[in-house]
Length: 270
Image (cartoon, rainbow, N blue to C red; front, side, top):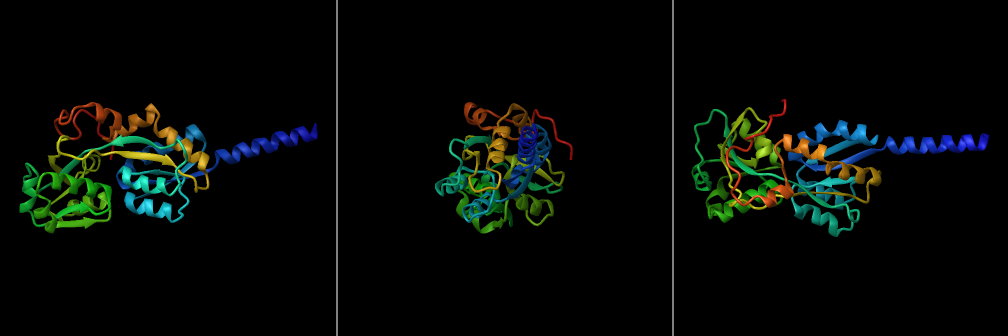
């Protein structure tokens, strides 16, 4: 009886320990608000605590490849997760395309600057972009401006930022005439206004893939977090913050969505 009791106690302690694991999630800066809002629900549903490291997906990918013990990675583009995947650090079968987004041009809220298309950026002195050589938001913005045939003229005016949130902060502070950021970042700022929304027909395809990783301290919990992000409750929360479901974005013909990026949705509380 005593052996059986000890066996049950050890089993209970083992389960309790597993439930108490801390999941380290590396995630694109643009997902900060949504993921922080989702964290309590994940902890309640799984028993696992979650800790986030937010930043430029390019920097996060390099850290993972260099040995950072992340349990999951939510990237703002496919290329950065590809780097991690090619290094053999993605749990087999865990990778999924999760979200989409839109690009917008923002200006300080009191600015009289008008932007009716990409060509208008050529006349500005300073345009903030996340680093266009590496950071997804900047890479997407450069692709849009290149397709529009104005990148060569706009490039000398570009001030690169560490990530998309840094680009937004610079415009909020009035340190630039305009910036190209995600709609999800702009819609929650009271210090900028959206001067132009990039039509889907003109924009590159924006995809946020997520995967569980192999080198973390809690790989099973990392997999649980990735699965949690695919639940309808999590998708609803992402939509509340302005993200698009990547499958829905594929299904809608290019240019079919009109209006402002926050049209038809409830604003999150500040």
